[in-house]
Length: 154
Image (tube, rainbow, N blue to C red; front, side, top):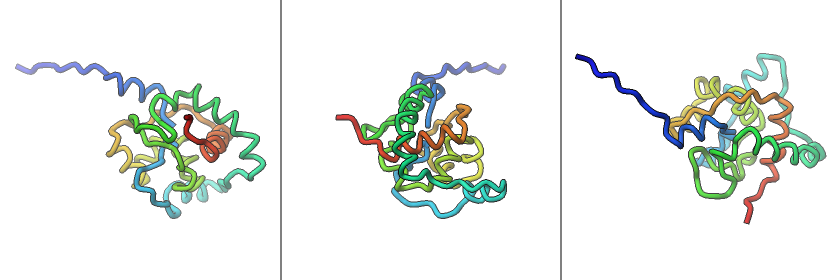
């Protein structure tokens, strides 16, 4: 006789499904920079050069990025300089991770956790797959701009 076990999603998993960013999602606790890896290789293969926003673009896009961070649900899983939640703390993520890695993580998290060893390690550490939120490259640039200048709220 086989018993069927039904699992209910936990509150933590439900929050995670509401939205995680690489993440900045992707801001690992290791503090190590990533050299060219699958994210950059994929960008090169597609003929797209993912170049970080220029300083003037960072300033102009930060407000839009902050709004996206709230409305896409990133805040439900990620902290910025606060207590670790169900996903990595994103304070300083733009210093730890290359722009192409962050962009790939927020636009294609499933591919990243499949193809990138550091993204896979983060999944192993936090045990929650970042959901695909339909973030465009333009939105990813705005999120990056926000995370680049984000400071913890006091």
